[in-house]
Image 1: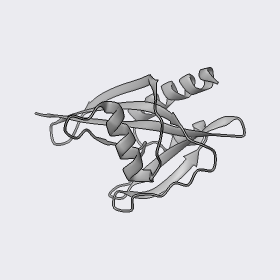
Image 2: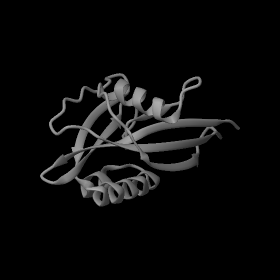
Image 3: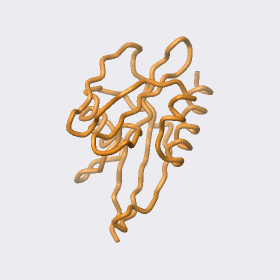
Image 4: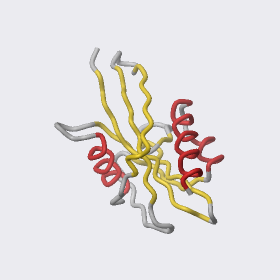
Length: 138
């Protein structure tokens, strides 16, 4: 068994005084999640998150590394997947261009809709923690 390490962020913007969360749908399944991807070489988790967000959305983001949430789970191939997410606020109305090879759809969702749209419970828990942090920070 080997370990796959991925990093990304809960990307959000303020809309009408509330955070709206950016979710991506995989081009190869019905999976909805956050922008993230695999660590390459000697990258840090933060560098991976910034690179993957840029690749998948064309957004250049600043990460809030004061917040970090982590989950791990077993993959069907027997590997362990470790995922770390930061948070990143982007300006309202920013243009997002999806990476068509990997992403079939993108959307901005309020907290309730984002939680409903996310495919897996561990991602919903990560959103819960990020939303609490973002809401208390503001």
